[in-house]
Length: 145
Image (cartoon, rainbow, N blue to C red; front, side):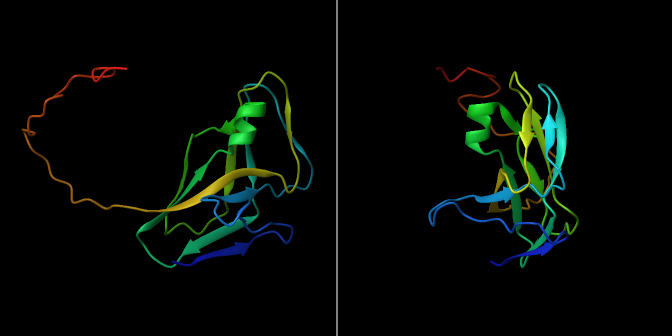
């Protein structure tokens, strides 16, 4: 699989791995000036990039960075971002500040991480019945702690 990035802004930074074994590629903010995110606020942070993969069965999943989440309460507003293989538009990262203090995003800051993942495309079928299982329709917490 090949992942190709296009710089939409000359200052954009192509995603990189922090270490050779890092599963995620760090995504960087591409800003003309710092962006402040107040407590409880959501801001769309541009990356200055668009991208494509060379196969249709890969989705680019965007996850929060654990350091931003645990130290500052800054995470993705949509929990996990989904970039479909046929999307060619600009990438923006929706950050939300769950922390108590305003957080400032600086140009070049690592704000999220990208993990390309194989996607399944199931055949959809409708039925009036489903097979029985031991758990059945028992809901949340039914399998214990």
